[in-house]
Image (cartoon, rainbow, N blue to C red; front, side, top):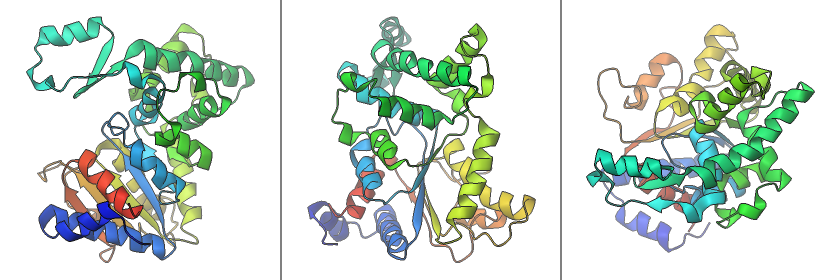
Length: 325
């Protein structure tokens, strides 16, 4: 693929240190795909509120991402941005905010994520009203779905289309729903919609708590997905940030080997993490990739990289390179 000006700039300038690690990692990602491999991506932090969809959506459309594991926050916040973008407020001086300033934001129902405030009414409550109907419908039918499947339902139904405030091509969830991309969401209960769902279960609006499938069902599905996918292709692991979004899926391999005795299942075929976590005693998010060898997650020969930098800067650049921009 002929490379565009952004990619050419990266190739010319990114020669040393973390910049060189970025180049090595992105070229290895490209090589992994060229050999017929697939890529599993994890999203931690607030990457959806950072509008990663501007480049991730096209990565999904061009089959450069084949499955995603993300926090419940990233699952929902891309859709919040889709329907309420014009109501978001940016607070560039967020470091100077006093406790009283923060209280004023709360009084206006603005929930702050670093320099960006998500409007509760236009974003969170608007989506709650629509997805609640899907939860209740599934509950009444005795059906169960994963969190992402309910998000796909509201996107595909057209129920929120009239509220779109960005070009839907910039929404990674819209792109994922069109590709029917599998999205694994561990710890969904910790998200805003997860909290709302819990409240509706407690209020009796949803009778069966497992109408939305939980963590053990998610791990079982991931185990089967990994086993089937790696029968014919190598699966790489591209991790943005740390936390449960990365920790949950990477351990599926030792689980398959040691607990399921599926010893023929291969290890992850590529590993890259973009992290600003400091390597320290006991920090898994900050652990160097070689530590994962001792846990049966990566092989000694697995191409592995860590880019110690801000994912909101690094990931779009890597995606731009992979897209030839």
